[in-house]
Length: 205
Image 1 (tube, one colour):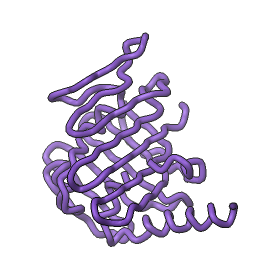
Image 2 (cartoon, helix red, strand yellow; image 1 turned 120 degrees about the vertical axis):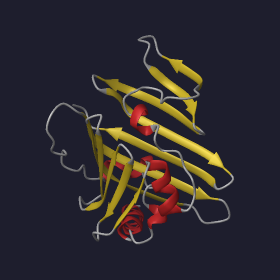
Image 3 (cartoon, helix red, strand yellow; image 1 turned 60 degrees about the horizontal axis):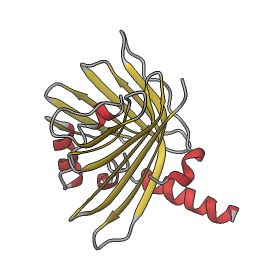
Image 4 (cartoon, one colour; image 1 turned 30 degrees about the vertical axis):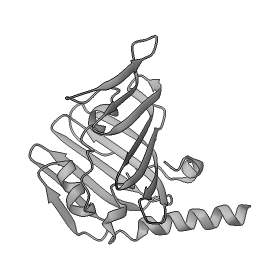
């Protein structure tokens, strides 16, 4: 069993190492079984107050008419309200990609130094992946908030913390709250392109 697990882990790492195939990168932003094996990136430096999280992510993609694939790694998130930066790392700790979002611009820098940019994160994903996928809401869901716009079936716990909602085609579940917000963010989406699942687990402060 150990050898099989090792093979699966190496396969997942290899999927992320082939970043030239960007169709697997932001979607690779919930394979929960291997999360414990992933390295956490360093805190992102910056001046002034900001919302910060470090932890692990896992994604499980099942494209329609194609074989499913999965990947996992670590993430570091810093959002000061003006600039959002997200670093993604492999399970062994190597930087895979850096994503920056500011007013009127979203940019992704790959490990090989190549870049892609677009006016919004959603447009960036459509550009590099070839399929529109609303991801802007993640900036709010990470804080335990609904994004601006239509919200369906929002639910709260006894402390009035948001625990689930449907928005922009995503099923969003938030749990394991601490002083900064949800420690676990689970997203799922199904459309004509397939089924997508993403999980983010933040390290405890």
